[in-house]
Length: 433
Image (cartoon, rainbow, N blue to C red; front, side, top):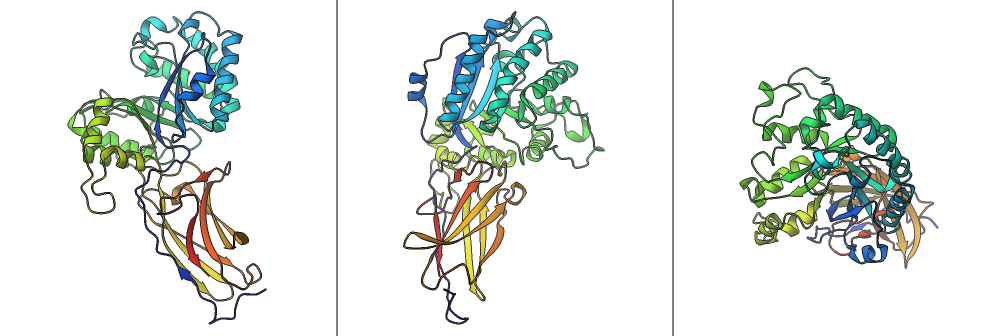
């Protein structure tokens, strides 16, 4: 059957608005740390009870200090593989950190020679490669207290580069590797621009930053320096303002997050939100630091709009990562149904990979026609409405009344992405034809 002739067909749009619900979407949100000692048996039944249904991320800290002077045993490697398979089967994307130290004594816990670290990286990399699609990032280069790349004899520029090159070769090209500070990122990369010129991160070299001292002091516990970029060298720490601008550029397509700690003025709700939006924060530890989290929990968002009066932790949790909202839809009936859709990302961060919108015309639960619209990361940065259009041709849709729905999914694996519109988040009704 054909669409009605021009003048008789009509598209009735639906009123669309954003809700304040927290969404559960892949590759972003709150996460918790699960610590494992690779020489010990893991109780997977107990671990299963600890997982949070409304969190898609887990951070696994895997302590390998027992093997500081020898190769990792085959039994330990098999257990590592079971652990990664467990999280994959539980549909949890992983933030992995391998470390020799878990008590703040990196110098004592790590191997005496780099060669031993290289051996461990290659052993672990053989396993990590097989789960690359389920790993958001690798934090650190195995060294330093708590694996946070401080308090180690292996953090000179030359040694860090050797460690980063070895880990990249071992783990493959697709998994982002996170270092602890912007300065460490620059030490791994030659400056390729004149002073003051714009630069951009190389998508072929996915190296990012993680910040476990977020809001802990005016320097985020040593994450930043004090010198202005205009007066500092490439291989020096810059001021907070300049480093935040650096991170803003770096994390347009790479994951950024960590732990919020302490009670510095930088961590006051509005200050924290401003910096998290600028840095494109997509994940945060859900339980550390309790003082900082409680501070946000006791504060309320007081700006006009739907978020006014919402507690700080709820506001932040709802905006970690990307937050897609269908803003406007218009339809025109001329030789088929032409739709124009405006969608906006109100979250702190952008998409880390390609997605697609699925537009369906349905009658009584039966799908009559479907259109797929690509959504690229560069088109879906925060607070920049993006317009797309599609057409249901006359020979696709039968005559009658049809509901038009919109869904969103990650292109790589088809995993559905929730939309922040009021009503159903998995499938938004956008109009009636």
